[in-house]
Image 1 (spheres, rainbow, N blue to C red):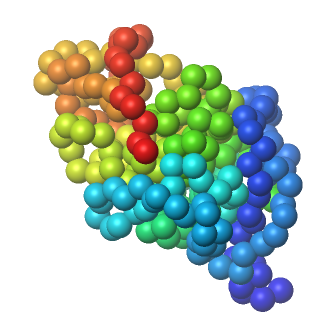
Image 2 (image 1 turned 30 degrees about the horizontal axis):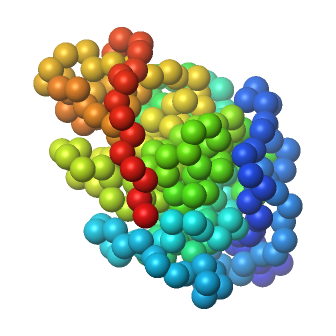
Length: 261
């Protein structure tokens, strides 16, 4: 098998809201049957009609995407690297919706692996180990980088086109937030990206929402920092100094801004 074939990523059709038992690995790619394969981990341009009225976001690199995406997914190759030294092993896939420009699939996968493998993250407490696997490997959850409309399909519930979410074995990252974070967050884009990956993955690991423990203190990573900090300062880690950091259980009744259009 050639090197190109070994690094192939699968393009899958979006099949609506996915359902999978949280306690069992998903036996096959969760978004639907494999319909084709791409030789390298690079974006496939969608049809011209799908590229009308792209949304442009200010970011470190120009990321553009339609509000309603292609509904097809590129799954990146897996990695032999296992993050964490002890605890239950959780395997995850990474998929990007085609038609998102300015996000290199290999670079995105490396960024996600770096965040989930950071010792300040979920592996820091010794309860979890995390490994990215390929599209055909058994996995416990899939991390999607999705356009706002596909976010709504994958997340279920009330559509908002704005937030990211976890729904069953879907960990859904809204590309609008990956590109532009949120107004007034008070930290660099890199920090917000660390937060959104860690927060949504935390839900898959059984974590619920938490509240700010006091003005000026770091926000718990499970606080809904996308919607408001409530006096806390941004923090993307559950073990920011090597020790567990959390706030009181609960969530605020913050309004969700209108989705990107």
